[in-house]
Image 1 (cartoon, rainbow, N blue to C red):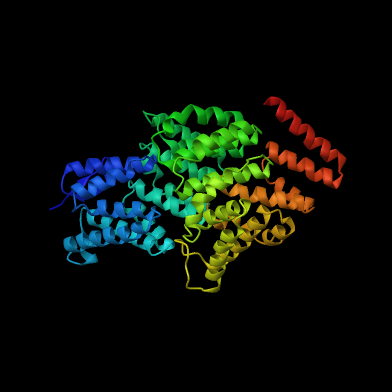
Image 2: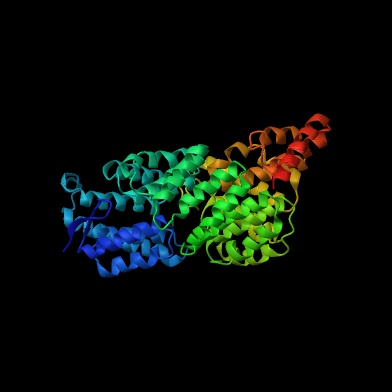
Length: 480
């Protein structure tokens, strides 16, 4: 027997008692702060209240993030159980749902459809449902968060901001919404507003544990080349990440490492890599992505990383045919190629080629379109050739798809490694004028960008520009 209750945000939940509602509030907060106890809490909800439909749906949603075969079966099991409860309470009639005065069952039904569409790789349809939830239940910010994750995976930066804008004014008393809004703002290059929005959320948070707001500020300082400010800010909050899941813990430290990397403080970078970025949960793809990404950036700056790829690749090898996400596969191919395992790198590439040639074959959980596969294939072949120093071949693959890198997913900061790689390829293949065009669209206060501009003009032997960018580089170095 279930009744309709309302959680602390005023959103309806059908469950057996108020204890389930309290646990549901804990689950949502833990999810939004990337806490390590998300799985434990949702399992407790399902165990204690088998008739809580949203508990089953949220359990299915958490399993969608899983990377084991058992997660696939678990998603189906929990969604089927949720569907049975919805049908039992609405006489198998959607009309009953639409006419339900308290709208409780409609929320469950919409959430059920959103996760079912996600399971079926119909991400566009899932997103439509999340917009419907935003219209009907404006304080359901967990739905907004999941929608933002979908947009991030699709590389749709406008969508990341659009969905949170729909509900922001209705949630100004909820500090989590500020980090979500700030991330949407920074992805759309509204840096000042992103910084102030994220810091507003942090001010409202009594225990100061809001790692996603920290993360948004890191993006701002990264793209504005405010390196010392970034280091000070992230280090001041780093103790609050200890209870985060491995992704959020390692990812915020990854951002911290980028500040040191852009100051050419190699020792600090490798120390953070060894103690904070790699080794927390080596089996998890997001941790592998972060590790490979940081090492890749070190390669671009010619930093000696010794044999660090070898350990990462030991954990990548079992996942080469899982195809978790295009952006992850790109990093897998780079790391495997750098470690000398081109056979496995090519196995990933062959799967993508086969998917491109077979319109019905979806190897990713994103319902990728054929044009996305074309961009991915050219990009990943360019990355493979870059990793083994075949720069002319890399240029041939990159040149036509460079403007479309965004389609491959990931945040602006994560995507930046592809643009940095393309710039390095342009310089190494004597396409200096093309490199300069790309570099001048980037932050000219970045030491790495200034160094590359100086190098381009040196190769072109344009003295006044060499002196200008060299002097600007020296001025910034003196500040550090």
